[in-house]
Length: 251
Image (cartoon, rainbow, N blue to C red; front, side, top):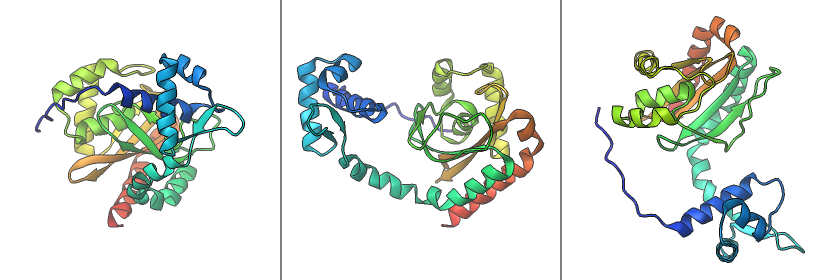
């Protein structure tokens, strides 16, 4: 396995601040004023205002009618259009993901891996279980956590050095030992899927199967459910998810 070449980049503070503002507004339940935004992000109010004016001119944010409070604008959708086109295959599979969710009473999460640190949920099928995962389409989470993380470590062309650097940063309910984690990654390479039992969510089992693109993991489809229940149906559940992925590949 070849180690990835380290990518160096120069800091561009204005870009980071603009991205932080967009993320904050995407999470906000109501429009926010300049002072509230600058306080939340620890920005100089005048700098915050200048960035907001540029974002507004580009159609990415808009001021609420009659106030000076900002919210996201429809320009964001045009930026996301390319990503949504790339996720057509996931949307094609949505009915099948819903079927699997109902059949096994598990939540299904399809995630796009951005890099070793970030992944984004692109499709969700919630189970009828009393415990509902706090995950929706667009939710971001660390790539290497849970079973999906083991898949990425196995199929993402990640070096041992990168894994060693990232492992201490991961947050778990009960963290596996690094030795056990590496063993589970090796098992994922052989099996073509990965399992997390109680490490990420107490009392729950997560099964994740990678979707490959040119021999690298591009997406992961994970099933999350009660540990005892999922264990009983593990083989059938894995086979069902793999069959859906095969159909996705054909399209």
